[in-house]
Image 1 (tube, rainbow, N blue to C red):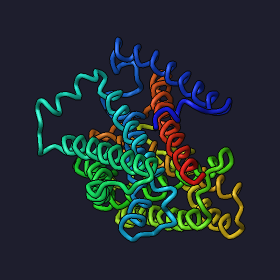
Image 2: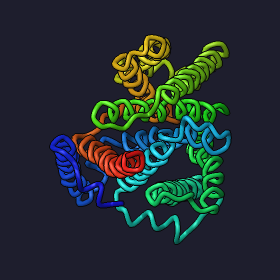
Image 3: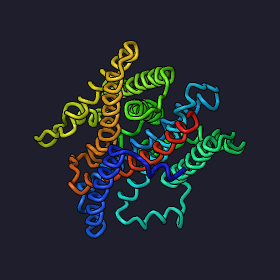
Image 4: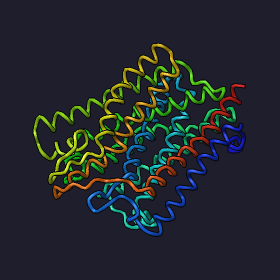
Length: 389
């Protein structure tokens, strides 16, 4: 089946070349970082996690979002998801690959990743994060490819595949839960020290992942003969809308706890993110425009996506998915991680600005993910169209 990824029109190959060019540029930046060290980034003693870990955190949610397709199809036998379930599994593969790449970039020296295996520490959440991420990648690669290969051969997939699929369902929950525990298990960071961080992570994941999947599905309908089906798209809108509502409800809960209780440790980070934090006569507010935009875009996208479904407007539906995805990316891919370091545990304020090298490497990792996703989707669509033909 792999040979199907080597066939395509001009648009397909132009997209592939574009992604390879970004990957090459990022590779050159990574060589600089590898030789010089993490001092080339914008990270510091006070901000030890930057754009790499923030992207990792967001993409874990994108990977977990595939659960919203696997669960209805394999557990509740919702057959209308039959055409896109494999797309959700392949999206999870690309997202987890990006997660692992961002972790390697953040380590500075990739060889350090072996320390998790050579010197395992089961009491550390990092150890369990390594287990769940690699395990989830393995499950999706095996299950997704086995199901697609069986469809390519025109036969029913093996019985053992179904047991692995069942295992992948709680595993999808575990990858984002363990990632949340990495943050809320740190007692010195009040912004992350909340029991609803894991539910908030899952709610945003079940909105962001399906939003990206629905957007890609709409693009494929425009550029190929592949059709997702109106019923499946409508159901995805329902999942996205309610998950996004739940996510913003959790955000509202954080605001209530912080400002009703007037606990400084919980208030200061929210002040910094949404209004700016004044310290030693200087106001720090570099994330304020982003976080305000995130709230406005996110809350605006929720009614917009339901309006798009009611009007059966493909363009409006695509636009609402983009707006919501960007809003959730800002919230979790910027504000959550970077905001958690302000103020520091010593009540100081150090703002973080990513370097050009960091941004280049980040763009390359995203390009790698879309490269993997493009190849996998190309194979999946060709197989499905061939079987239907």
